Amino acid sequence: MAPVQVIAHRGASLAERENTLAAFRRAHAMGADAVELDVRRTLDGAMAIHHDATLSDGRLICATHSDDLKDDIPFLADALDACAGMWVNIEIKNYPADPDFDDTDSLAATVASHLIERGEDERWLISCFHRPTVDAMRTLHPGVRTAWLTLGVREADCEKVARDMARSGHTALHPWTDLLTRACIETFHAHGLAVNSWTIDDPTRMAELIELGIDGICTNAPDVALEVLGRN
Image (tube, rainbow, N blue to C red; front, side, top):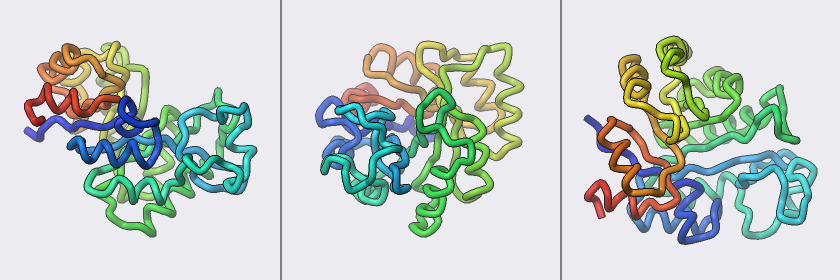
């Protein structure tokens, strides 16, 4: 069995400001296996690393030129450079309720083009709450791993969803921790899919998920997860 992966949520975001180069480098220094980061498109089509659709001053990222972003907001190329030595879960922020939603998946296409040019396919895992965007990535870049990010899947639906995801070529399910059950994990494992859960900072819950057979723990505190796993 592969070891449980420690995925630093937006980097080591309790130790450094989230989604910054410093947070990504700190995650590596702590010993994290991976970093999860968020990418949004700017007005001129750049790939900015930022969770929210709006900046702290209220401006929409999609309506702001990349030159007008603050210096501490990195772009994808620099962020991936800062994650050297780890694999990276790139969450594409494209959800129908967001002000920057794009049903043409232009951001996914831009990310795919960058990753194809960059190589190292084994280091990248693409996720998104919008399932069609995750599906689109299978066509845009078949060589990269993909995961559906979700609040959860009802146990009654797990078999159907797992079967569909496996047929579509996806790698993993990324469910919210509070709705995750052993039965769900076992069903997805039976179809060859990994289960990486978010966002877990409580060591007791981490230990519970490890016992349930989780594949990856996405956490703001990678040092805590490593300690629970006996790797610190």
